[in-house]
Structure formats: C-alpha cells, structure tokens
Image: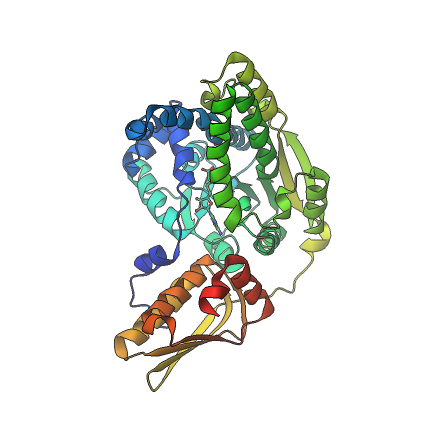
Length: 424
Ligand SMILES: C[S@@+](CC[C@H](N)C(=O)[O-])C[C@H]1O[C@@H](n2cnc3c(N)ncnc32)[C@H](O)[C@@H]1O
C-alpha cells in the first residue's frame, strides 16, 4: 500500500484522546512534583488551579459543588501514580512497560534510576508526550514512547523490538474502557508478552474502582444533603458517560473480587496481592479539602487496596500456536463503485491504513458508491467504525454505502455501539 498520506493526520482522525489522562499529570504537578510541572509547562497544560479558575464563569453554587467532586476523581490517580512508582523503584525491575503511559512523568523519573522505560499508549498520546519528554531530557536511549493499541498484539510486540529480559508491565486507568471481548484480547496479549519475555503485570484497577465508590460515599456522607445530591449527580453523569460506551460486561470490574480472581486465573495468570499501603505517600493531596474525619476514612480505604501482580502460568508459556489477526485491505474500482475488502483486526493501529486506502482511491476516481466486504474481518474498534462513518458520509449521504459478509463478532460490536442502526 502507498503510504503517501500523512500518517499522523490520519491517526488523529481515527484516535480518540482521553482527556482524563492529562488530569493525572496535572494532579501530580499540583502537589509540587518538579518533573510533572515541567512536563505540564512543555505540553502547555494549565495547573489544576488555573483549570478550576476557568469555571469562575459558572454560578457560584455550581462551581463550589464541582470543587467538592474533585477528591472523588483525583485521589485515585494521585495515589496510584505515587504508589506504583514507589513499588517499581523498590523492585528489581530493569525494564518497565507503562501501558497506558498517558501523559505522566514516570518515564523521566525511572530513567534517573537507570530503569529502561517504554511508554505505550494510543498514537495520539505517545506522539505528544514523547516529543515533550525529549524536549525536557534530550535524546535518551532509556526512554521510548511507542504508539500501540493494547488490543492489537502486533503493535505491542513490534514496539518492544529486539530487546531481551523480563518486563515489568504496569497498567493504570485503562482496563475499564474495554468491552469483555476486548478485555480478554488484552489479557491474552499481555500473557503472550510475559510468556516470551518473562516478568510481571501489575495493576490496581479492579480494586480502585470499588475504592472510588467508597470514597464517594465518605465524601457525600460528610456533606449537607442538598450538596451531597449535587455531587452524586455530577459523578453519576460522568460515570454514565464512561459506562455507556465501555463497561458493558467487563468482568474485571465485577464487584465480587473472588469472581475477578477466577477470571484472572482463567485467562492464564497466577496472581499475588501486595498491599498498596506500604507504598502510599503519607498524605494524599487531593483529599486535603475534606474534613479531618472524612480524610482519615478515605485514606483507610486507599490503604486497603492491593496491587495485583500477575505472572503467566507455566502451561500458557508453552503455548506456541497464535493467530496474529493481521489487518489486510484491498481496493478495486468497478465503474463508480469502490469495492473494499478488509480482513483481520481493524483497530486504532490499522484504521489509518484503511482511511489512507480510501483517500487514495477517492483522489484518483469519482466514487458514488462504496461496498465494504468484511469477510475475514475479526474485530473492529471505535477507530475502525469512525473510518466507516467517514466513507459512508462521502457517498450521497450514505445511500451508496454498503457493508457485506459481516461475521457475528463484528455484528455484535456494531449492535453494542449502536452503529448497526446507522450503517446496516
Ligand atoms: C485514564 S488514562 C491513564 C493514563 C496513565 N496510566 C495515568 O495514570 O495517567 C487512560 C489512558 O488509556 C489510554 N488508552 C485507552 N485505550 C487504549 C488502548 N486500546 N490501547 C492503549 N492505550 C489506551 C488512553 O489514551 C489514556 O492515555
């Protein structure tokens, strides 16, 4: 395929960037961390205080209520960033894969301790944060930011290149974005990496979800009833937005921890729990605005959380047959109709290829209809769906657009996301 299109522009067109990731950096900057402050400055991000001043235009009671929700949203990213960084620094880890890295300053910190750092995230994030870090510390062989999609094994494996040695993979704030199907793919991908390289996968995400709910009820319990209701409504509005698109059937977030542990075992991992308490900072800045009693209770909740340390079970290490699900797309004109065939995985990493193929065809031909043959397409993510939408819009308001030979897995994704009503 001819790659004449600017790949970065295509990536931007198909990648959503999660703004919550920038919030994590802003929180750590706010508590006085120099590396994070520098990164915020280079990225042009305001401090949390400045962001909040932006809400001066809001009527005073709304601005006040918004401020009250901040500990609910901020305490978890703050505690997990500091505790995980402390855990890594006190371990024997030599190579850390931060999946997803977001915008945090962890890479800058770890390279100071001679730990090799791989920041893995969606392309739209790694290109920005990678350039900013380079501006701060210059060229450095110990830090690499790599565009990946956690659901795409090839993108993960290629990013590691020909390195050797155990991996210490950390995951904070990502697994909740996946459907059960995607979650299983990600577990399979990470197990496969650990089977090849050895090492551990560490996350607190499952327990932190429950902790966040408990902190929320401590905070609302310490407020007058009307304020508590306002806080609940802001938080549930936000949670609703996240869960509508993502939390469907995600078994890593089952409130029954025993079920989650069984899921982890079924996915081929041995599990060890390490209490987060010993790696926590003495105080959590984001809880400072709370009453002494509420602050103490919230700290106790965070202190009960565990790191989940997962290693690939021996049996799965011996597995060798794998299906790489490579993405392949072909285009052929028939009269004014563009016939596309797609197979494999159409996701964040591969969607720009399809967009580029379409744009090249559109630049050379008059296209009045598009037919996409999905025979062989095994998976489609929101980035892939977005490319289909772009193509659909281009032909006579969708009238000349058709999808054929869709398998059940892809149809299920279409139905879950509501795209079936637009496209099929
Ligand atoms: C809440 S942020 C957390 C980032 C970082 N770990 C932190 O604590 O600041 C979630 C991150 O997940 C990334 N993400 C979402 N889906 C992803 C995927 N399929 N593959 C890789 N990263 C993904 C987003 O781009 C975003 O940077």
